[in-house]
Length: 202
Image (cartoon, rainbow, N blue to C red):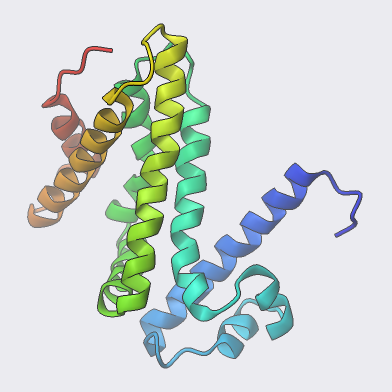
């Protein structure tokens, strides 16, 4: 891509390529296992050279962890798209709609669960995963703080971090409950129920 291409377009193109590589790799991990899948195989399946692969990820481990960077970007973009005058808790609920396919779609959930097993069983990946998930929340905390400031809530305040932490706890609780259910109700309804248990004054 030309150096004259606007930075936003370059970044968008990079994200698309990283997302496609991640999806291709996850399918290969499901088929061959993490250790049984090579960078050469991932690059070939994605229709690119190994050299091009390394333009997007420094290693196979980085590709696994990069998934959470992409998730953080999607979360941030989704929150930014919400109206500034919308209650923060409502915005967070709508932001979490991006997780619905990860839970409800069988193939997407199989990929996601496989990646989680890989991460949890590999100490170095698990440590980096925890860092990335902390970053996801920090990104939202900053945005929530800015939103509350816009809505005349004074800073500094523990409120943004408390709101974001509670929202993520609700999402995890809803996910666990839905997976343990007969899954006749949509995951979104479980998420609604979990988040309705909190009454937050903004």
